[in-house]
Image (cartoon, rainbow, N blue to C red; front, side):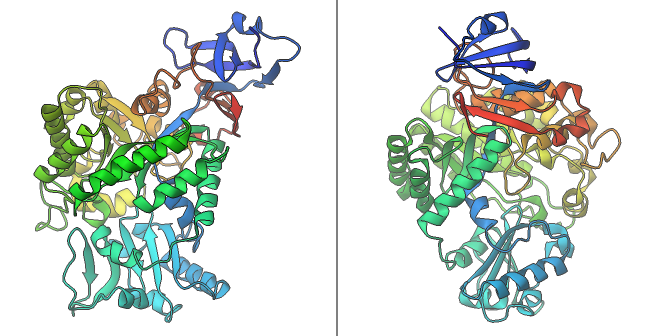
Length: 536
């Protein structure tokens, strides 16, 4: 046997406790064939040698919860993501509208929800720059929209419009819509009016996003929100050699008419599997148990501190969620449940428990994503039920979203038990990491820095926010590699660097163990390999 590629000249962190560090790694036909001295022995005159140049080679990373198509298309509209004020957002809308007179709708994604006091955005500000065409912007969490008056008019929203199920039309004192729409019950009637981009544009956006993720060291992703119309986009994008990452799709299941949608889920899974060639699967089903704290729609066991009459919004009753999760589990799907509030987390855990009780034991590996608030009584249930806690580590910092919107809404006691990554690891639960991009940055290195320090990029606060929930670099790296591989049911294929496994690799300019934790986000990714094929 000879090596197709030999990696040497740096520190190789395998992620394998049996052999955590080595100095050489050989790849043949896309798989790891030797480590250390044995790897050097496989080199001949035809072997490509990759000089790590004093840097490090690690298992590549997965993203256990990301929105590549939604994010890729959203960022092709008005560039509002980096705006730091309401005036900046409005000016960006004005400029984009002038430059695109042909656009029927003006849309943009991922602006910060704390730019307006209380997260309340007024249509009048958008009307001042675009009075004659509909405008719809969505916050970075996608749970809140900001519409101008023309968009509200086209959706038929007036003072007499009943409050939608699973959503809120925020109103002025006279009952007329303010321009802020919370949750999908209020957003979907407006989104349904926005023309879909052509399939070719969607495919181009998806492939471009995959290349960006590969440039950050990512080789596998969980698209955590796939609507029926988007399945064809994924199938078209994977054709040929079009995607720089491997992907699993979580097909969205909403409460209304969910039973009638089950045959479509199974049919879409089969279509994807047939076209995916092992690079694309559709083995998960996405549920939204609740909303988000920032808009007051996360479902809480106790009322909101700033709104004592509200517990937030559970999108499903506990009984209905349990029945739906049990049904998709019986079809062999992996439940992937968005749950933010402690009530949302509880009904998600209850649903998983009901499915296991009804359908019997199997390796189902259900995922609860985000896990912002967990009641102490529910912490041990993750390990007991085999539930994977999928965290977005960049959320675990004391940034303006936390200080200006979250903490005032939930108060100090609940505020002190957010994103309990360390506590869940200590309990024996499995943990995976994701980005939720475009909600937060897609680079795992940035997430590593936050998970280890619990600090903002500026290093605040000293010692970290809720420092008892900091984790070690070993644990953080594993959550992005072996943890996501376990979520993907692919721990026997990738996630550590071991002979026989797929050569999914990331080359860093510096050894992360030799870099101060707060500076990890600045380490350059020099190369990414998927099955031995260089994707970056």
